[in-house]
Structure formats: C-alpha cells, structure tokens
Length: 546
Image (cartoon, rainbow, N blue to C red; front, side, top):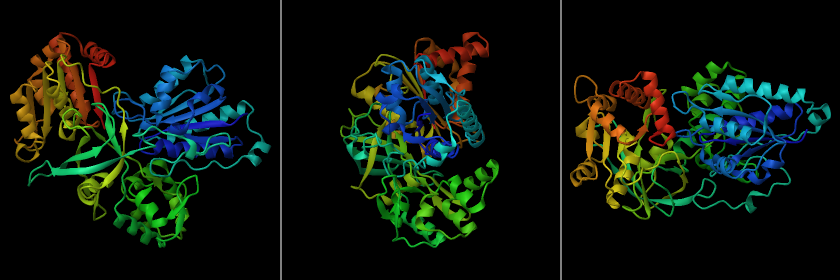
C-alpha cells in the first residue's frame, strides 16, 4: 500500500493535533503516512494519490478554516475526477452551530461526487471529539488492515511521522522527499502563511467608566485586501510574564535552545514560549506525560480548569526544554471581524475587541490576543496579519433591504456594512438590532449609529440593554416586539444577518425568527423552519457566530 496522506484543516489547532496523532497511529500499525497542513498541500497532486484521510474543523458560518480555503476551492471548482482515490473524513464541529461540522461534510460530499471511494463513513465530532475521533481512527486502521496494506516489514521500516506545524504562520507538517522545501513555496501576500504587517494606529475604549465590560476600538494600518464580512487573523504573542511562570514551574533554563518546527531550526526556549507556543490551552500530551492515560471526561475537565503553568505546578516532574515544547500546542492566530469599510478608511482595518480578563485558581488572567491589543502592544508597533475570507457572509446589493442583528462585539461587521452603504449612497433600507448590558456605559459606537440614523443610512435602530430594567431584555425580545414589521421586511426580500455569540444569542435569535415566520406567515413551526433554511441556501440568512 502506498503512503497514506493525512490532511488537516484547522483554526485552533485541534484538527492539527488529531492529524498528528492519527499519523503516529498509522505508523504504529505498520503503514507509511505523512501528515500535511492543507495549506502546504499541492492540490494538483490529488488525482495521483491512492489514500487520503482528512481531519478538518469548520469556521464561522460553516466555512472552511483559513488553511483549508485553497484546497476547498480547488475541489469545488477545478478538480478533475478522482476515480482512483480512496478516502475518509473526520469533521470537527459544535452542534450549537446551525451548519455543524459543515466543512467536513462538504469535503466528503464533493470527493464522492468526483468518483472517489469512501473506505469508512464520515465521522462528525462535537466539541467532545476525543471518543468519536478515536472510533473513526480505529475503524480506518481496521479497514486498511483488511485491505492488506500493513506488513511487519513495513512496520519495521516505517519512518516516524513528524509533528505538525509549530511555528508562527504555521510551518508545514511532515513532507516526503518529492515535496519542495518550504523555502521554495511561494504563498500569496496577506494569507496565513505569508502575513502582512498591521500597525496599531489607534486604540480607544468604547465602554464608559463603570461598565462591567472592556471593549476596544482598534485601528490597524495595513496593505491587506479584504471584503466586507471577512475577518482579520492576527498572529499574537504570549505575555512574557506567563512565559517566565511556565519556565519556572518546569524548573527550566530560559536560554536553552529548542526546536519548534519540522525544519529543526533552533530558537531560545524563552522565545518559543512567547512567540510560538500556547500557554493557556492544555494539550492532552502534557496531561498524558504527567498522569498517564486518563478518561476523556477527566482530561477535558483538567484542561478546562487549568493553564499550562497550573498543570506543571500540580505535579512537578523533570523536564528538558525540548520535552516540554513537544507537549505544548502551537499558538494559533486570533480572528476578528472587519469593522470598517475601505471606502471610509482607506489603508486601514478596524476591529472591535472584547478584552478578556478572568480569575483562575485565585490568579488574575487575561486573553492572549485581547490583552496584547489592550495592554502590551504600543502604538506604532505591528503584528503579522492575514485575511480570513468569509464567502458566506457578504453585504447584499445596494438596493436590497438588510436586517442586522449584532449584540456586543457582534456590531463589528455591521459597522462596516453601514459605512459602505453611506460611502456608496446606497438606497436599500437597513435595520439594526443591537444589545448590551447598560446604555450609559455599553452603547458601542453610539455617536456613529445615531448619526447614521439621522443621515438616513440606518433606517431603523432597535436597542436592548439587558440590565437597564428589572427584567432582562435581549435583541430577540426586541425582534418579537417588532415581529409584524420584521416579517414584512422579510417578505419584501430583506437579507438577515446575525453576528455574535453562537452558544446562546444565535440559537435564541434563530428560534425567534422561526416563531415570527410561523405566526405571521400562518404556517407551522416546521414549515417556518424550512423557509428559514431555504433563505439560508439563497444567501438571505447569513450568520457569523463564534
């Protein structure tokens, strides 16, 4: 049996980690495998392959993660038939999203349409992905063995699978001798592997004193090209103090050299902790190294309640710097919705950033990216940035009515939509539902929105400040209050947009829309739900939820 290619599409690193572990399991079972980041994969070689396993996450509104966009586009638009290819898909997702594990489903469907053969049915994994992924992997290996691919000789001769990407920008995963070295691969500027500098030129607090939140307006000067609805991915660094805590907890010398990518390029251990490694999210390999095999539920609970430093302090052990590096996740880019129109702010991109601060184990902690933007990045300094394309979240034509539902930082893309419509003198009506905790302290972009409404760009503005009265009021309550008119807008062809929290707000808004369509359309909830799904397929119901 020829080499098995394990491709991964990832945004947070989970699919990358599972792909690496799958490659190692294949090698242990006697197969030859290579683990490849989709961004490094030469799609023109796909028709020549015999066996491909795909492990991929889904981003935003069912879109492929940024490193999977090119391969996804090739499959959907330009790929020739694949009659010789055998494959299987493991998709990671979150069932709170409407298009659960959609990227894996699209890869699976399209490969089947192109004539490829499934060796094992697709596995869709929820956020607790360990057990279903393990079941999928076991089934894949059993099927491959039944095909007669693994031999004792192959097992003895099989090279070890190299770990997947570990460098900022994502260094490629294991390659074969026939693959070009990374130095010869040219990536388009402004993409994940070839980011462009984004210089901080403005940072101001949007929330007022007394607010229980801390929300920033951030302006970056950059040559990045983007469309409204896209996100900007920022490659960020860890607080050096956190890095010092980790090194001290492990009893390690910060000046030692370590290798943090498959090219074997050395760098200082202290620099790796700051620039290359995730010190917040605990990798299963770290827990396994310290505690041995653990039940998935226990492992997940320990990871959720700890940062890396906490795990190291809980159970002291003897480490070498390289051993610890090999048990840590690579740091991942942070995506933020574009909050400005290039027509209104040429050469810039604006972001709306909720600063994350919290207590964990009696210590004050902060989000890596948001605290960097809020506290540690000086004005004039730059971060590597790239455009994360979101083709399923796009501003409608200038004459089309739009309804935007975006509480909290979900206001970001709608600020860009309204700026664009003002700059182009668009005639289509627009309606915004915005919500936060208190009007006096949390009305993000208040003066801008009021001016847009007075100028006619924003036709209607409905506000929901949850803590300004005894009973909490959210955007879905305002939607129900305006149900008759909202239904009329929908009936006249309005495009609906939702941006913000996927776990509570988006499902509540979704069920509210179903109720409104059923009540005012005189139909059953199922018929209303079907209508909403048809609207989604037609691009009239678009969501960017996280």
